[in-house]
Length: 177
Image (cartoon, rainbow, N blue to C red; front, side):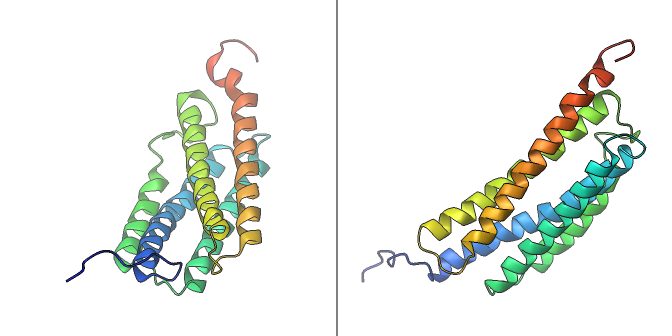
């Protein structure tokens, strides 16, 4: 009895289950990401970067919604267990252990900015991975949409890096900066 693996194709159920699990994991992370950005928006309220964080929070939420739409368009159903985990994670994100004082100053704000950049970078990697699947022949994904989402993630990273650069002196140098 030959037990060699079946040839791989874009419609192979094993491939689909792995992709579904991967996207589920990102959907869980996206739910927490929305809460992290909402919390950061509170930290930056009343600063010149308030509108940046309001805009980023809206975009991050829209990205999560687009991911959910992509999952649905592929015919996948998000794991109920993972969605419960996402809800718990999102609530824990509200605590914001990186910036408990919800301040745009100090090391907590720096750690918060770094965590936000890491989250956006993870999302960017996911969009790039999905785009690579389109380049490999997958016709189930919209390459133009994925490139647009990748570009938006890069712009989000740039905005966060700019806030970090512009405010670093306020956090770490003494005196009026």
